[in-house]
Every structure is written in C-alpha cells, then in structure tokens.
Length: 545
Image (cartoon, rainbow, N blue to C red; front, side, top):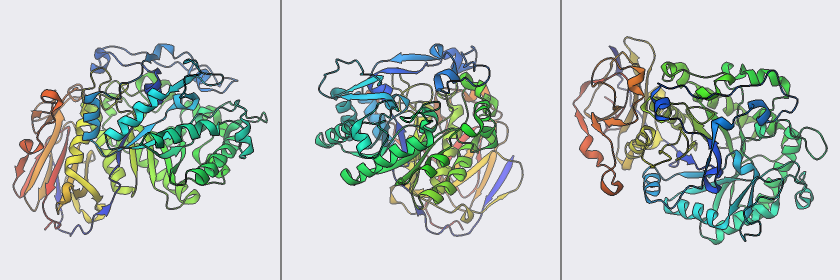
C-alpha cells in the first residue's frame, strides 16, 4: 500500500478559473453530414477483435497533402448524416456538464460553403466540398442557446479560391469575407451570437503541400497574410468577438512527437505553430492549440501510440501537461497574457482508441482536466467530441453517457471555479512510486472548503490518504472491476461506471441521479482508495489542520 499524508499548511485563496473550462466540439461534419472516423465494433472495444489501420506510403509523397500521407483511409471512415441537435437527451446531458463553450469546426469546416437561401441545391460549388444550410445553422444556434453555451466557429480557407474582396482586404484571396459576414450576422439575427472565432482548423497540417496564389507554399507566409487580413476585418466589423489562434496541431511538444515518422520525414518543411505565429503581424486574443494523449491503434503507423496497458501510466498522463509547458512560452512571446485554450483534446488522434469509450480513459480525462484547470488561469479545455466517434462523451447511436461524461458530471457538482497552488497542498510520499495524483480545488456551490481530486491509476496498489478532518468521498470505478484488490486492464475497459460501488445511470425520462444519495462519509484520519479509481474528497474548511 502507498501512503500519503496531507499536510497542515493553510491552503490560502483559491485562484479563479474559467467556469467554462469543461467544453466540447461538435464537428462541422456532424452538422452538415459527412465523413468521420468509423466507430469501432463492440468486440474491438472489448479488445477481442482486430481493427483496421492506417498504412503509410513509403517515403514522403511528392504531393504533401494529408490524403497522400495517409494513403487510402476509406476503410477507416464512415458517412454520417447530420446530427439531431434538437434531441432531448443530447440537450439534457450537454446542459448537465455546462456551462460550456461549443466549438463547431474541424477539418470539414475548412471546406464548407454557407448557403442560406438554397441556391446551391445542396451541391457545394468548387473548390468547396460541403454545404451548410440555414436550417442546419439554426439547429446549431438553437442548441447552443438551449444548453446555455457560447459559440466558437472556424471558417473555410481555400488557397485556390481567388476571392477579390479578400485580396482587397490584404489577403491572398483564400477566404470569402461575404461568407464570414453571413455566418456571423445570421447568428446575431437569430439570437445566438458567435462569441469567438478561430480563422481555420489546424492550418499547419491542413495545407501541407498546398500552394498559394504566388505558387509558393501557402504556409506559413500566405496563410499568415490571410489570417492577418481576417483579424483586421473582425476587429473592425465585429469588435466584441474573441479571436482565437493559431489552432495548431502535431507540434513536437514531446520527444516522442518530435520523433514521429511523418515529422521526421518532413524535416524543416514541417510548419509548427511557432512558425505560423511568427509570420503573422496580428496577434490573437486567445492562444489555442490541439493535443491528444497519443495516436489511436488505427493510426499507430504514425508512432506515439500507447497500448492499453500503458494508457494510465504516468508517461501517458504527462503528455497533455507537457504540451501546456511547450505552448506557454510561445504564447508569452507572441501574445502575452492571452488565455490558453485547448480547442481539441481527447484520448487519441485518428478518432480515439478502442478503449476511448470505456472507463480506462477516465484516468487521462481526470488528470488532464485537473492539471489544466490547476495551471491555466482563464483556460478552456474542449473535448473532441460531444457525441461522435469513439472519443465522444456520448454514444453516437443512443446518446447514452459514457464513463468520461459521468466524470465531467461529477466534476461540475463537486469542483468549483478556483484552484489552490499545488505547493500549498503538502503531500509526503511514504511509500511507492508514481501513478498517484492529487489536486486541490475550491468546492462547488460557494461552500467554503476544498475538493481533492485523487487519481489512483495503479492497477495493484491501494492508496492511503491521511486527512486531518472528516470528508465526503465519491469514488468512480469500472463496472467490471472487483471491489477490492488487483484490477486488470480488461476490467478497466468496462463501458459503465460505478460511483461508490453503485451504478451511475439515467433514470426514467433521462432523469439524472441524486448525487447526495451516493455520498460516503469519511471520518478524520485514514482514507483508503482502491486501485484503478478516481475519487473526489470534499472538505468543509479552508484549513487542513
């Protein structure tokens, strides 16, 4: 057994955090209908059936676009019709983890044309590849308003577009100012304004191999010219809207990511977020980036894939925080004092791992959220996605909550909008190594005190905390795991979650459970937490003494 002692130092004042830190993505491909990662089968989720994988071509293709780099991925993708954003269960469960930012973006958004009068008949004009109708946009706005959200969007950027008004504004012609105004003005007229914009989704990888109007590579210089023109227009015409960027991905935030076969092959031609921002003259109001814990099984050929047995290891859990430490100095150099937003995050690139929908991913979700909320004032963490593919918070078929959704539901009810300095929470490790993480936050509901988030991702060792006061304990565990003792990786891949040993599930009419009925009173002194669990311990005092 590993044992920690919580010290007696006064916690002090909890530093405020953004109350919308828990946010999520709804991909544009979900809104319009389109292709997205094919769901894993139940047997693949259980780990008993093989899964299709990306097969990279030999060497670096002469045409450096994502299609040629990925090869034939049709067997990995599936067509989805538009999501029903009016669904009652979807709205109930989205409200229950709010208030949140709702991001409508993704690679599909980069080529989506807005047709609000129906003149296209649903066929995207070249070079666009998808059409957003007025009814679909109204559905987004109604959903955001119904769940008490704020809306973040990105736009279509097409280097071959040749738009003259864009050029007149100082851009290269790769985006259409009239389309931007249509989307924003219609949102305002319908009563749900767009509150923040990212110019484009993942520009440093979306345009690999793309040439600008001058025939030179579009990134970084051509793209920077367009983003600068876009920012100037937004600040002049829509001054209340937050400008968020650069929305980069695949930056070498860890040695493992720097060593990815793709990054190594591209060498100096790979454009990082830093190179994008250094080419720009207009700084964003909010610094954004994307980070996933690794690459899923189907994308394992890229490298940086964690096996299921490694998913809750300290090395895997450290990735998201290493990304924050990588981006903070870049933010400080290019847009000092801007908040950090992670506008896409999840368990793995390429649509999530087979276990992304199971309890095994709760350790990553809890640790990433806790570390980010503790370290990033004003930070917002967007989970990709709300209800699509295997990293969705909700099952895309019946929209039932997955284990990660239950974690966020519990967080909203127990954790407030303040974080204590980790240095003020004195933890003395008595025995054991790693796989125990403790974070201190203000309590929810304006109650004086603290909530400890305790992650015991060991599959073998109990964790003992010695608390100098009584507390209430809420412990999440896999429905497949034993109540005591060793827990196997297979048991952590349970698709349902227990709270203090009892199933968490929706009631009749999607009624949410009463949290107080699950509470376990812990007297002062030793609290023993089982292997493979995530616990919340609520304390009713500002002093641990």
